[in-house]
Image (cartoon, rainbow, N blue to C red; front, side, top):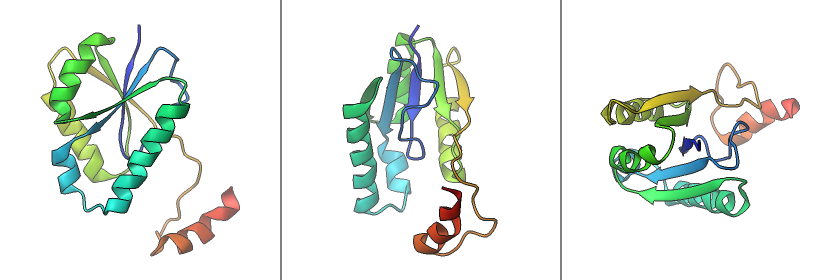
Length: 140
């Protein structure tokens, strides 16, 4: 049976374990987005990543708008009643995802997957992307 994979702003690609019949979903949740201090450029970046993913993905992607619990409750029964998520690193996003999961129907279960790691982050995060990039380019 097809699986429902919920993408978020730290997971904007097809997971390695996804199958062609699985369904990716990204939810533009107005409550979550209003609580983020994102610029228009960040929103546009996420949207462009999703558009690129939709045109090149080996699985189907749906971009939906609305409160995440309501959207997922409508969508989840069409799949294996298990919601698949990539564990985020951002504590705000992690709290939000857990809050949404807690609001879903009792019959919906969750499977958390670890995020692939391409770089070992510095122990002390430098100010600004350029300094960060100089520290991690040797790992690529």
